[in-house]
Structures are given as C-alpha cells and as structure tokens.
Image: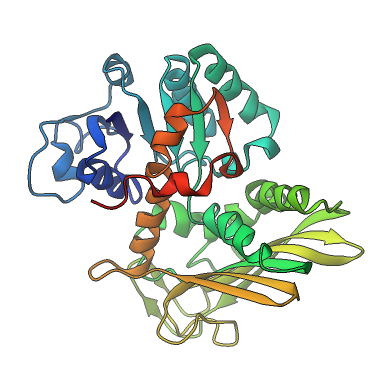
Length: 357
C-alpha cells in the first residue's frame, strides 16, 4: 500500500484524486489546494465523490511533508510559474518523497531538459534519494508509448508524425489553454504566448530530439510553424465566445528536419466546434478528438487513439487519461533508483499494476 498526497485539484488533479481514493493499492494521505475556496474541504468533495474520506485539503506544504507519504501526484499548473513549481517539487524530493506529475511538460523527456530545470531537480532527487516522473497524454503517451508501438511494426521508417486533432469547445480552461493559444484573438492582436518564437520548440522540441535519439537519426534543425484560422460567424462554447473575424482554430507543429525535409513531426489541429477550419483535417466520423501516429515506412502504419466516457466530454476524458499516466506509475517510481525518470525507463507492464479490482 502506497501512501499518496494529491497536489492540486484542477482539470487533471480532480481526476487523479478520484483515482487515488478509488484504488485499493493506494492510500490518500493528504491533499494540497492553493487556497480558499478549496482548503478546508474533504478530498471527496473536491473530486465529485459522495463518501467523505476524512482527508482535508490544505495549502501547507510542510504539513503534507510531515505526513511522510511515499509519493506526491503533482498536477498543479507549472508552465506559467516554472520557478515556483521547481521549488515545490524540489522541496518534496529533497524530503525523500517521490513525485509523479503531469505538470512541467519539458520533463516528459528529462534528458532533453535544459539545465535551469533539470539540475535543481536532479540535486533534490539525490539529496532525498527520491525519483521524479512526469508524463501525460500529449505531451506524453502520443509521442512516446504510441510512437514506440507504431515503430515496432515497421522494418524501415521514412518519417514519423504525431498529431492531436481535437475540438476544444467544451474544454473549460480559457484561463490557461485559451489564453495561451489565443482563442478569440483578433488578427491584429499580439502573437499568442504559445506561438512566440521558440516557445513551441521549447515545449515539443525535447520530444523530437528524444525520438531522433531513439531512431539514431541526426537532425539538421528543429523548427516550428503556426497557422491561425478566423471565423466569419459568432461561436459560443464553453471555452469562450469568439466574435466574427477572430481566431477559432489553429494548427501548429514542431518539426525535426533532415536533408531539408521534416522526418519527425509533432502537429496539433485545435478548433472550437466542428464549424471551424472546415478545410483542415478532422478526426474520423463520430469522434471529437483523437491522437494519431502516422509512420511512413515498410509498411505504412496509422494508429488512432480515441477517448470516450459515458458522462464526461472527450476533453475531460483526456484529462482522466493524463492523470492515469502519472497515477499508474506510482508503484514503480517508488521502487526506482533516485533521479529523473523517463517513460522508456519504465517497463510497459508496470503501468498496468493495480488497474483491475
């Protein structure tokens, strides 16, 4: 039985919290919330469960460390506050507490992370003899586990493309995702934060370089591209309301270039409602969003991952799967040697432990 603390209860954290509470091989030891109105509430109340747990949310990190949990599931938004997130993670690791998380997406490929991020976390892991693992569905599964599976089925690969094709209309995250990607922006607005020079290559370049490393491919360059789409009609949805003439879809990519051609590509096509960007690629019929891997090779491989749920929207189902990538690794990470863990370090079957009860 692993004693676990859930750190944050947002779009992903509320699902990992529910998973921890439900699993017989995990014990919820504590919950971190950033402040009112979540602090002081029972953990069950924060993730939509009816039966109280007796575990009350707090914003006191020291109190949570004093509980001496085996692991912390860190899902707090870190990309907009990286230095604070590094400080929080480092404090937990140095105290001897393992961390699995979905935040700080640069750490999905820790061996490609820049020194400012990697070094303090490595030092904290060494100080506390603890391990850190970060993953999700994208970045994460779509660009590692799914790609690895596809590539294992070819005798030769000419190119690899990883795509997210998703309708974000029902994703209630305008504060971060909507703002960062510029949904609702006018054509003369400043470039959205996610598409400023170097940002996409920072977020996805590590994945490109990591795949190139596994493929023994030397890239000439890693580049990024971005294309907006502006609606002619007013669009109202959960994410935001977009007025005519404003951005309601975008496609962007990071590409690993060899010989003047992209050989490894990570691409997103994200829209608000199916009416947006009608000339761009859609998911297969009946699907709102998919993650797809296409390997041009011998033979050609196309793998599509589609999520669904009897109650939740597909975007929320994606948050459940993102949470799963962290929660399902807890036991192995707790047994791992100290340090930063990459997905390729974990035997694939270790993600299956404790899933069926």
